[in-house]
Length: 476
Ligand SMILES: C[S@@+](CC[C@H](N)C(=O)[O-])C[C@H]1O[C@@H](n2cnc3c(N)ncnc32)[C@H](O)[C@@H]1O
Image 1: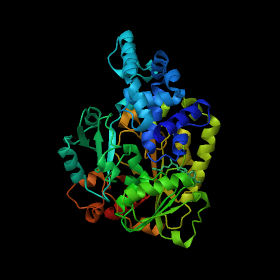
Image 2: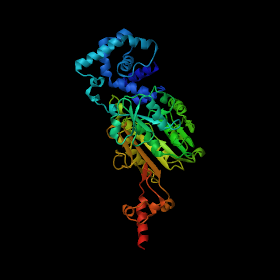
Image 3: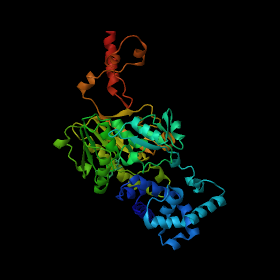
Image 4: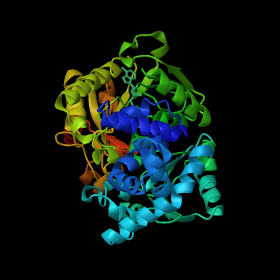
């Protein structure tokens, strides 16, 4: 019941222009934020269809339900996965089900279509969200990828191996699933798969997380035992991913300004078996970088509040004009830049990953460019060369993600790295040139075995200078 009341309340507030869907969902205190978000978005999308069904069956008069509550219930009853509550509401909806079903069927006959989605207004037809696979991250703190695959196979799911291309992810149907081609611990299922009621999810063995949102922790890649900050952490999916990468060893300081979200996060982390965290209900901008407890912090993940314009269902909703508000974007970008600059003040920090689920350059490349200008001691790491969608010029080292190019929500990631000191730079091994690789002559790079990690290759302006120097030596 709580799910439907919250969803209806959010739809009311959106209509009254009291906030964007994403913000209202996060602020709702509801335990299963993704489930609530999906229900609100889908109900919004089908709003005109639901309204017609409700009007033609006189449901409001018969039940005394308010319109948005009726919409979320009818959505789940007819289009979603069935009403997920018991008691009087369920009994009431079941009583009206035949009439509601008949109204839906009449609409389809009238419009000469067979599928529910064909009833959607044209701007929602083939909505981007309908093409997104459902991603599941295996929580390696509790299980292994192999065990999850075996468990699902025993339940009748059909494992198709590791995807070789994005196309393999886009053609999943029924109970077929694949391992992702970029992230080893990620499995991809068909769009319609829902694991919210599945044992593996409830037991914390799997985390329901979009692929793009897995990139920041994966790319930051803090070693076990390291000291890490998750600056704007709630509800904590990236925190639990960081903990899994760190094998729960080390210290993971997680801050969030919002106490409600932090308490949801605490429950999620408990379920995920995370033990290396220290949660604090604090403004990251007020955390003292010189505090003794942070002296060994070498890695920071910064995923600050953003417009959320990359979230697929928001782009199809009435929230769009609000999200594009120039004044709001400017305020967000200024906050994001202050957070990024603050992260670079931690004395031992080596790597800072910055991410948003925004598609706006103002919140992404512009923030990173301004930060690099103000912090010449840091530079960008060239991320995942094989990733198809790059940051907008002049920052191709960063990654972008989108439904069209990467089959994910819209996302942006940049990885900043402290430049080595002069001494470190001098001693840094030089990767071999193409000519050196082709020749038999062993090179310094070969000898040291230095290669890109595959996750990120550093753009090193010092290499050219040193290579010239080295060639000069060779000639001599
Ligand atoms: C995009 S969400 C973070 C999502 C999170 N990284 C995850 O993956 O689950 C941004 C968060 O930043 C928090 N926040 C906003 N301003 C903050 C500040 N000054 N200090 C700390 N947290 C802040 C918000 O409360 C919100 O929970």
